[in-house]
Image (cartoon, rainbow, N blue to C red; front, side, top):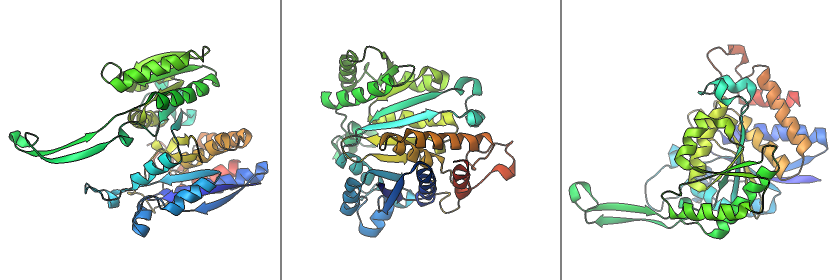
Length: 367
């Protein structure tokens, strides 16, 4: 059987790193008797340039017909604008998640021993960190009502008329319960069985509802330890004592911010993969951006993209053995001292610093 994969290379370094992911998928597939058929489509800034729409209808249809979507990254300065109504690459990503009903975002953070010194945090604090951040993906501020009013009395400088803008934060019980159950289910399958629920219940009404619903759901998972934590304290604890965390569940914007912070425990955003799961075709992508400053130079780190493919094998195709093989291959490459530029330290020998394609080749070799 050939699995149908919708490839969305996107912008910036996207096409370079997604090539390495398919290279690794083909290698591990050959080893485990699996095959993949890739169908490439436009999304993001490249789609805006081609047809004025960050998510063309034909791309969405292809995604729906596929077994999984492997996405690289979208966006860049070329398409940044404050012009109201102008299309933005990120709108394509938000619409893709909404149309596919992808309300659960998983972002594992695993600190490879070989990279512990690449983090800005001391090895003694981060060695052994292995956590999963579960982010609600289709609600909250990013999907709430928003707008801008001009010439509002008193909104300008020195009390003059000026502009004001608003974004609405809304969550329903249904949205909270389904992400809570997803998080409890993940925690239940992990050895430590510990779940931190992150909110801002001391200030926000949505967070008080969040906490109420999470506690109600917790009754169905008595083997999982539930800990409530305010988001500001969580941000501090992630750098003060990250090993306390097993699974973290939180709402959309908090999850967006905390996952980027957590990524630096591993030394680089280039080491953080993600999965977006829900009602329809799942989407797998690295958590980093398009890095337009290094696009086309062949120096980008493809490991997060490759680890996204690893998650695809695990969560979409139940191919844990193949996924484990990729994880072991990456660990072996790093243990041997190979680094892309973002991972290289001052003491990394220059002959151990490799480019995008070479890093992909190394992972394939170790498979």
